[in-house]
Image (spheres, rainbow, N blue to C red):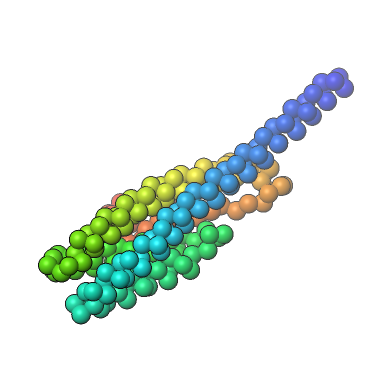
Length: 188
């Protein structure tokens, strides 16, 4: 009987350790996927000086575009890699779309300017970065969903409340994109 109780206790300890390690693994996946998003956003920072340089050639035509690029750079620089701020990311994505739209309009309106080819190349690079960010956000949201489920379901919720005490992480959503859909998800 004592051997059976000891065996049961060992199995229980192994299960608790496995659940705890699973929670930590899910938390680390969220942090890593957030870091990927930040890395792509930081690549935008490296690209923005070139966009500013090219846009300064269009300054007589589109002064507001230069202001938008500068605002985008400031917003990206303000995001802290150590904390997950999906609202700030949403703001960055809206500013990015504004910059992309502005550059596209400028390039179409002034195709004969000498820097138009450079601008097109920079815009192609920016679009590629946006595609990478979209993929990274998708992975982030999947990892957040897995993490939130992992800390909220039984028996993981008990292990979480006794050990790590981690809170659910908000997923990234784009309110301006959601606005265009008639369907609204209601999880209640």
